[in-house]
Amino acid sequence: LPSAHSVQLAYLKKSGEWCGATFPGIGNFQQLLEASNVASFGRGKETVVNKDIRDAFALEPGKFLTSFQLSDTSILKEIGMTLAPDVLDIRAELYKMNIYSSPNGLFKAHVDTPRGGNMFGSLVVCLPSYFKGGALVIRHNGREITYDWSSPSNEPTPTVQWAAFYSDVEHEILPVSEG
Image (cartoon, rainbow, N blue to C red):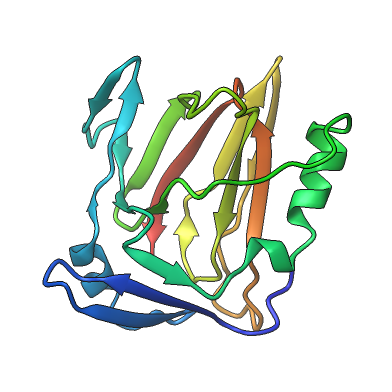
């Protein structure tokens, strides 16, 4: 999905001040990380923070805005045709913005915790940015697909990347080595 323009991001700092950033070339990446919380994950009904399993940061909805609008793309239509062809209208709910950074940002193999009775899958959107490593690996029924969205430094036009998969599919984010 080529990005015709850069993606704008506004996020709320812990001081209550809104800041802006642009993908790619986010500028003060450290400031974005400082505005974020350490990412947790679900284990049954428990919420866990363990950097050996998930080394990432997260911004909750309401703490950020982005110019990327899923409704302006064909992503939901493609997901519907592929994963839910018998469903007339699917929708996506923003869960959070996860930030995996070097060195070693990762999320070991896991299956998502269902967030509601109508949830049938997960959608991962990667905003245009420059990084190395951090591939998304999806495994199911003995098959493995790797989405390597890292950017060679000579890539002139970064893109918004995405992947969608059923909720019971194991997936992981491999360690980010740069960016």
